Amino acid sequence: MFDAMDVGILSFVIAAVAVEWHLSPAEMGWIGSVNSIGMAVGAFAFGLLADRIGRKSVFMMTLVLFSVASGLSALTSTLLIFLLLRFLVGAGLGGELPVASTLVSESVKAHERGRVVVLLESFWAVGWLIAALIAYFIIPEFGWRVALVLTALPAFYAIYLRRNLPDSPKFEAEGKPKQSVWFKIKSIWIKPYGRRTLMLWIVWFTVVFSYYGMFLWLPSVMVLKGFDMIKSFGYVLLMTLAQLPGYFTAAWLIERAGRKFVLATYLLGTAASAFFFGNADHLVWLLTSGAFLSFFNLGAWGALYAYSPEQYPTEVRATGSGMAAAVGRIGGIFGPLLVGWLLTAGYDFGVIFSIFCGAILIGVIAVLTLGTETKQMELE
Image (tube, rainbow, N blue to C red):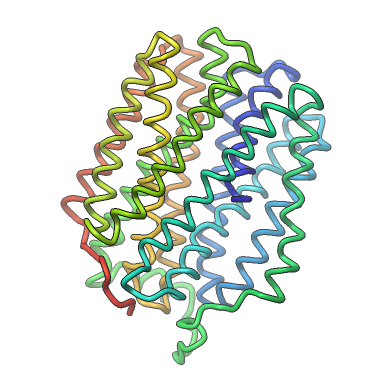
């Protein structure tokens, strides 16, 4: 929830900062992309660290990092310092997400593991809703800096976690000596994990590339389509509400129909919604296709977070999940930048969102051809 609140607020802050600092579309794109650069570094580094010192310690470490850096970014007055702090925010966020799903995966029984991880990820929608509410009520009245100060508050949650959160039972039971970083990186490419790793890297790249390209630009897209900033924030809030049923339906289906079915189906829905959203020229079509985009895309995210840790044994589970997420974050770097570049070059949103549609279809093909079904399998 706190992760999503931070990322969600950034999408609204970009629209507000662009007006105050007179930013070009390309500069706006860099704000989103530097966040993803940090997420790529964080997912890789903290995933490795979680396999060495434990899931709980890294979970708390990343929570404090992204909360404090986000709060400090409220004090900046130059784009360069703002970008530096957003890199640190991204590092914390990028590390926390795969480590959290790994911790929960290892703490839940096989028959309900997928459902519980998707429900865990459903709080991403709650965080986005909180971000949209803060943007709608706080930013117009008190400014974007106050909104960012609020994102520093989750740091205090680490105090509660330190006292009350147990570490992963599978990690604590792991009696093997801790291998070197290089050994862990090599391990995810040996049989039978190499095929799984290739599949995850393709899917993560296409999903994150399209998600950050589309969702970080949603408020700005509405503004550029002619709506004023406050109305745009309200419309994005309405679209965001559809994320919750997207997660809940995915959670219900994932233990019944399996990971591959849910992931492929929800990605296909995302691709179709992206195409219609990019070509919509009427408010009703924008809101409807935007709601379906939220529904399917976030349902797919939940399934992907449930699916990723199940591909690897305990000693490299956080490493494998973290590296897949890191590759995805590279896509998240290019997504927002691509939108900025194409808008500057004069392309319309129909072309831009069609590119995201095509990228998601590549991810669907990877799941169907390379993916292994892991429904109710015991973790190694």
